[in-house]
Image 1 (cartoon, one colour):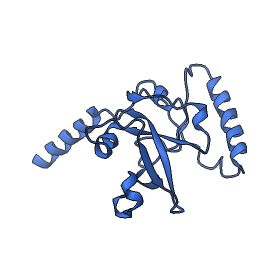
Image 2: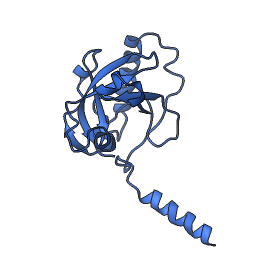
Image 3: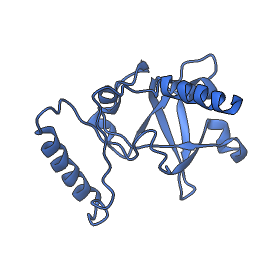
Amino acid sequence: LVGSGLMVRSFMAVMNAHPGFETANLLTFQLTNQFQAVQGPNAVRVLQNDLEARIGALPGVTSLTVSSYMPLTGAQQPLTRYGREDALTDPSRFQQGNAILIAPNYFDVMGTPVLDGRVFTEADNTPQPQSVVIDRLLAEKMFPGGRAVGERLYVRGQRNETDPYTIIRVVGH
């Protein structure tokens, strides 16, 4: 009986927790195999633009966005290693986390609160300089007592190359 009560209490706490985005009137879906047949970044962008135009024209659609992974689905997201400048000389200081690719309007559409910084723009879709948005929890962890926007975060990809990213925005979690 006590176990059942604790389970119900835990379930209610999860149901009442804010996921970091607005869930009202939100529809999500996933495309799984469509992009595998498309070759090259330009072809992927053309397909994405076509899908966005078609979906945006549907009755009742007021806004849409794109991300590489949907939040809270339990799907395996690629792990990324990241750190501050000191991790460049001491690799043990790199930490591990998830990185998600998003469209510039992602946080606006999802209703994620902006705490500091600017929005992504199409100009950020260039190879250099690279921009990144982080959440409040990571900002507090990496830059305690300071402002994260404008700081550099060094990301080590799957090829073990380390690239600098400038933090342009901090969002709620």
